Length: 171
Image (cartoon, rainbow, N blue to C red):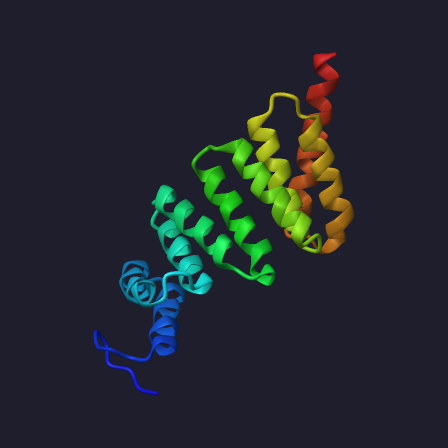
């Protein structure tokens, strides 16, 4: 295989170059490379996924949403949990809380081993719903599933205490 920047390289090399640019934080360059790949193979879930992530990093959430939905449609089941997780984050950034929760719940349904998704559902419910009971339940579920190894255990414990306090004073 060979690679000529801006040339007609083999598809996998071009795709990997675009993905590498994403990880190197060159989002615009990654988009231009990955769009070449997209013009060659319109339903490659990897290309669509990384285009979505690039646009997410550039705060272009509507375009990111479109690419992530296309990636989900094109993906095999192994890709879906991570894609729904990112889609939930994309919706959340756009303050589309109901859609965010649905996407995050789908990610959790497809891969229940990722406890961090439960944490994101809890924080989304806390911001979205005035009834904090759902958030409280998801924080508890997160702590149960993540155990001591969770990335957000301290925050979840703090939020549980505060929510309980707020609910006590509301009564």
